[in-house]
Figure 1 (cartoon, rainbow, N blue to C red):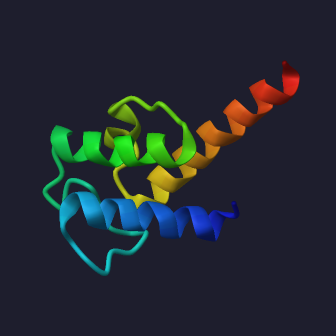
Figure 2 (figure 1 turned 90 degrees about the horizontal axis):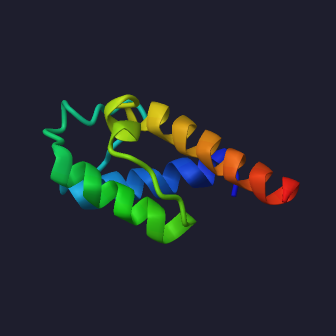
Length: 86
């Protein structure tokens, strides 16, 4: 999956979890009224789609969609590396 596909998928997850539409990579989780329940919904969607178990702080430390996409991309790359090294 390329970065644009990852971004599009994560934007869709954020829209689903927040009930907002038309989100962009610059949108901020906290500005959208995000809370721990919304974060858990987003992370559950990420886990289901990518098999990535992430902590809540992944969203809290990367509150814009763009930052979150980068963080997820890094996590997925790290997991892929570990698999390749095994």
